[in-house]
Length: 249
Image 1 (cartoon, one colour):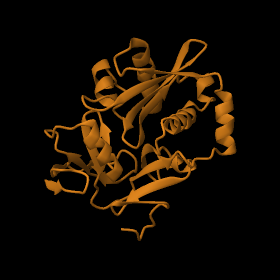
Image 2 (cartoon, helix red, strand yellow):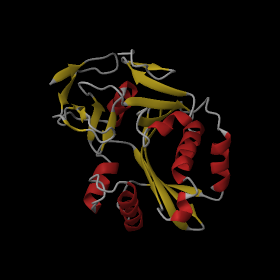
Image 3 (tube, helix red, strand yellow):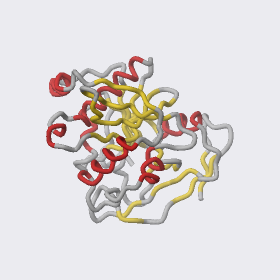
């Protein structure tokens, strides 16, 4: 157990180190996570401060990677006020120009759940996520204390995707996106569209950041995030405009 004090928090927060386990992203590596005390009375305001220090949430649990021999999971955030779309991102927007987005409460919805179940089965086979149930679904995407919205993507009155998003003090946090896994919609790059839309939504709200979770240079599932610029990278307890070199630690 360790203790965290900083200029944001009025009282110290106890942190707990997880047991070592196989890394979900990089082969032949062991991982640890540092968790905020689960008995801590978490609030959206406290989480808004913690996310600025590289923490994320999964359900009610707030954590950050804290591996003994590896520092490759880097928290990143996009400065949406300075974000300029690339040509490929503009093409993605054009492909999805008829998509309507509706804000929904983070509650159980059978159609949304069925889409989620099909998505994780196709995208995460054998990883543990491919055996969803309706209780684990909401436990993963929502929490008791976060300000979460399910942004529902629709086209011609058909549900085609969901972006589960947390609203924090200075930005939006992309929790998880899932969408119609059929070939037709795979070609539409709905994952990219979701990030572009959330960046625009943060701009509309007058916020500065879209928090995108962890960037991992050597993981194809996680290194796409540096295609969105200007990106900031959190390491050595500060946000930086460039990613770390191996000598940064």
